[in-house]
Image 1 (cartoon, rainbow, N blue to C red):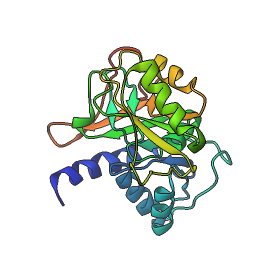
Image 2 (image 1 turned 45 degrees about the vertical axis):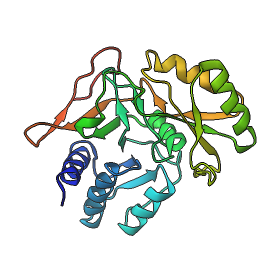
Image 3 (image 1 turned 90 degrees about the vertical axis):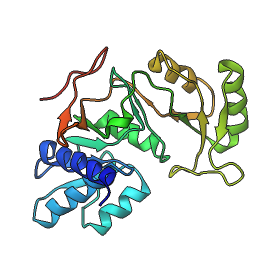
Length: 235
């Protein structure tokens, strides 16, 4: 296994072993790092632990079924913990998510869970969000209007994901990837974007993160402390 995958595996397994309790309902995220959390939950379920999950995407649903993890609909039970990756983690623990296109469901689960654990490798840590394009989920009927409004209001590119073959989310919507550059206030930007009629959600997550786990220089997994405004860390 390549070093990069070993790092993702280590942080994904650590999140499950530290924060998932037998008998609970959990949220499982999407992406290449969250994949390893799914793998670890599957191992524990096959060992006999009664864990059920809510999935953030159709891909995660498929992985859970293949690994024997029982799935339930979102909202049926309280979520004790949710584990997911991120495209960027800023110093204040604001996040950019949605590189895989599951931002709406990922945010729904992050909002609903009692504890939101973010798992990343060191290259995802940034001082401010914005190097990674900000995904914006849009109702298809409104996508040209929203694209024009973003360019007019913010003076930035808003590129339809997939180009001539549009990327369609699990919710049947389209994505615009927006190049805002360094984002000083992700809370304000998220609110401004959602004011545009047709915007369903953005990939800016603020004030939701409880724990950030990252691979340390010694190969172990560290729990970071936030710098700036963020929700307090959970021991």
